[in-house]
Image 1: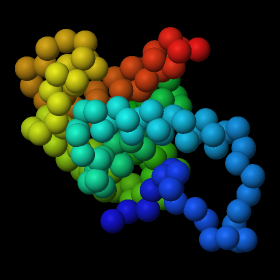
Image 2 (image 1 turned 135 degrees about the horizontal axis):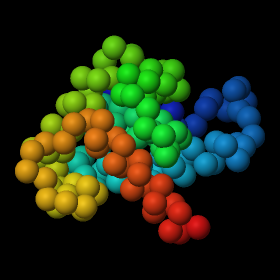
Image 3 (image 1 turned 90 degrees about the vertical axis):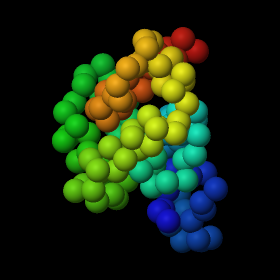
Image 4 (image 1 turned 120 degrees about the vertical axis):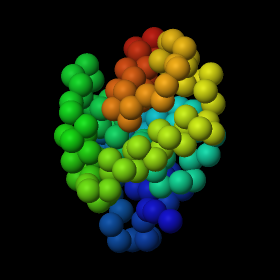
Length: 142
């Protein structure tokens, strides 16, 4: 499987490598929690590695909101932040979107896009629209 550095159930070995959790870490954990919840709603099953990659890409896009970076830049930053293989990210994102389209909750996907979808959206569209949706939800709750 993969090592999810954001998973709150994973703990560092006692004594070594422990540090105080700062405000930035809490913000990142809260954002990743919301992202994972959204991706789980869309796909139903987040056990596949491609869903984790999708979460990482959405996190990077959310960091840059309202700017919309190129997917190449999103993938490079996600690879650096989450220790992922940058060359494999585009394929993993594509796999996640295909899986969501074929077996996920189509109505939740359409609610996210706020329109009826007649063809599968691109990974870039899913990443950027998810980031926009989460930012709007964050602003509503503030």
